[in-house]
Length: 66
Image 1 (cartoon, rainbow, N blue to C red):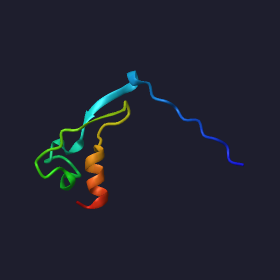
Image 2 (image 1 turned 45 degrees about the horizontal axis):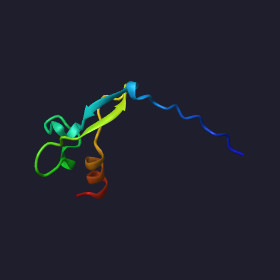
Image 3 (image 1 turned 135 degrees about the horizontal axis):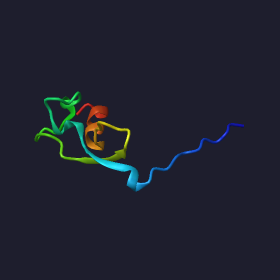
């Protein structure tokens, strides 16, 4: 039988708010998945160890190819 893994819950005070990496299309690695209208304006709550993030909309566009 497999042992259960313990999951560390992140407290809201340990989170930070980052803007989607596609907000600056000149430096973004994933600029081709940015919105057609212009830079992405989404914010994502992430842990302290994260430096860059893609929002769910840009991630979805990368998965569907649209």
